[in-house]
Length: 140
Image (cartoon, rainbow, N blue to C red; front, side):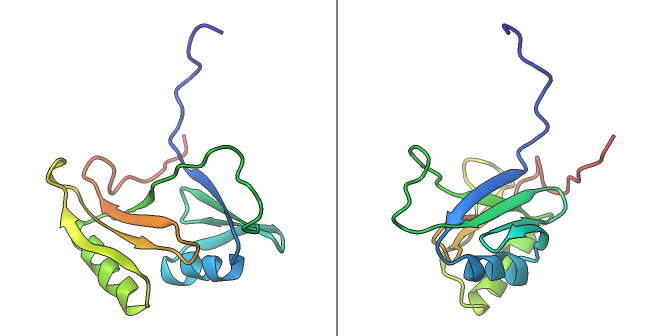
């Protein structure tokens, strides 16, 4: 096929293999407010905020990832700039490792974010970005 198919409709699925599945699931459900969408079996759970899908599967340190994995971080969209600061304060109070205080991006006006770590060591970025914050998925 030499022409590109219909446009993709966003990126709303990410999958991680983690050693400490229950601890990581608690982080996303109890702290970030995700809901369990589906649990096919004890080693796999799908979580959602409504417009997305986060897959967590149990794995061990001895298992090799499928190909080179170079994920730097992934983000959760905040609807207001002040929400970024509120999330930083809340997560810090919950004992989550915060990698830096909320900051405005000098190279991207209006954008505000910070980074923290989930229990598996993944870098999570709560971010306000005027181009995408406040959007909701609407089914046609």
